[in-house]
Image 1 (cartoon, rainbow, N blue to C red):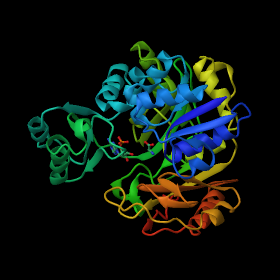
Image 2: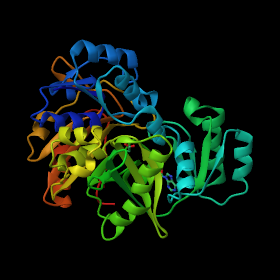
Image 3: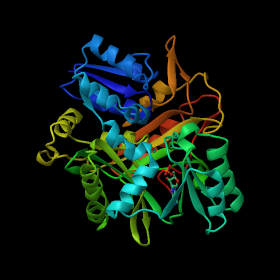
Image 4: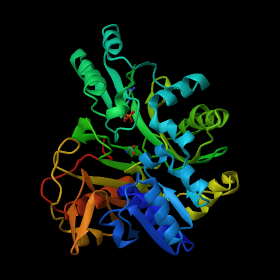
Amino acid sequence: MKVLVVGGGGREHAIIKKLSESDRVSELFCAPGNGGISDMATCAGIKATDLDGMRLFAEKTGIDLVFVASDDPLALGMVDMFEECGIKVFGPNKAAAIIESSKVFSKKLMKKYGIPTAAYETFSDAGKALEYLKTIELPVAVKADGLALGKGAVMAHSPEEAVKAVRSMMEDKKFGKSGETVIIEEYLVGREVTVLAFSDGKTVVPMVSSQDHKRAFDNDEGLNTGGMGAIAPSRLYKGDLPKLCMETIFKPTIAAMEREGRSFKGVIYFELMLTSEGPKVIEYNARFGDPEAQVVLPLLKNDLMDVIDAVLEERLDKINIKWHNKAAACVVLASGGYPVAYTKGYEINGLEDAGKTNDVFVYHAGTRKENDKYLTNGGRVLGVASIGGNLDIALDKAYSAVEKISFKDKHYRKDIGRI
Ligand code: AMP
Ligand code: GLY
C-alpha cells in the first residue's frame, strides 16, 4: 500500500516510523514532512492545510491510504474531502474534529452529557469577560475557543494576568479568529495525565497512558508550549483509575459524539486532570499528541495498519491491541526563545552519533535538510526518544543521546519524567 501522512512534525515522524515497520506498507509519503522524515518517506512540499494540493498529489501518486495527523487539516475537513473522492482516509471528519477545534463545543458537550470537567463561562464580548473577571476567585484559566498551537490557554494567578489574557485574545486578536470567543474556567488542582485512544465511533480502546511536559522550563515554569517532552506510561495512571476513566469519560464521550451525529473515528486525545474529586477532562484533541506519539507508538505491539483498518471498518471490538511492557521517554530539543521568538537555520550536529545510542531514536520536529546537512527549522527541533525496561533506563538513555546533539541556542528541559 502507498500511504500518505499529512503533517510535518515529530508526531508525523513517529507515525511514519511505525508505518515503515508494517509489511503491508510498500511506499511512504509525507506532506509537508521535514528533514528527518525525508530519510524514511518521500516528502511533498504541500502545506498540511492545502486541501486541493493534497488531493491532486494523492490522486497523481496513486495513494491507497491518507493518514491526517495534524489538527488544522482535520478541522478544515480534509478527511471529508478524501472520503468524497473515494480515497481511504484515517482521522475524524470535520464534524467530529470540532471536539478539538472548538473548546466551546467540547465544554457544552461535556456539560450536556455529564462528563467531568472544570466549570466555565463563555464570552464573545471582551467587556463582559472583563466584568466577569471582577466577580470570580483566582487563579483562573482563560482559553481561546479555537486552535492556537497549544498556546491558547493562560493560567492567570493575578487580576492583571487575567485581564491581559482576555485583552490579548479578544482585543489584540493574538490568535486571530481562534480568540474571538474565550472560555473562562475554574482552575483545576491536580496532576495531569494524557490518554490517547483509538475510536471507531462505537468502541473506544485506550492506548498506554502518557505524560506531557507543557511548560517551557524546568519545574513547570515558563509559558505553555506544544510539549517539551513526554513519558509513557504515566506513573500516576494506575489502580482503579483506568476503569474509572473508561466509565466516566472515555465511553461517555464517544457515545455523546455518536448521539450528536458526530461519530468519532480516529485517535482521540483525553487530557485529564487528576483532582481530589476524581479525573476531569482538561481538553480533547482529535489526533495523536506531539510528543506523546513519540513515546506511545513505539510501545504498540500491533502493526499500526491493522489497527487503522479496524477503526475504518468499525471492528475495534474484534482486535486485540497489545503493548510492550516497557517504558518510553522523549526529550524535546527546542530553539532558544521558543515558544515566543526564535531563529531558524542553524546547523544541527551529532545526530548520527546520538542515533547510535542503543534503543534511541531521534524524531525530527522542526528540521530541514540541505546538502546532506540538517538545519533547525522550527520552535521544537528534535525529540530524542528511547525505550527501556523501566522509565529510569529510558530517561538515562534519552538524556545521554541529548548530550551528543548540538545546535546554536539549543534548549531543553532537564526534568522530563522526573516531575
Ligand atoms: P489546554 O490548551 O487546554 O490543553 O491547556 C494547556 C495547559 O494548561 C494544560 O496542560 C494544563 O496544564 C493547563 N490547564 C488548562 N486548563 C486548566 C484548568 N482548568 N485548570 C488548571 N490547569 C489548566
Ligand atoms: N502535546 C500536546 C498536544 O499534542 O496537544
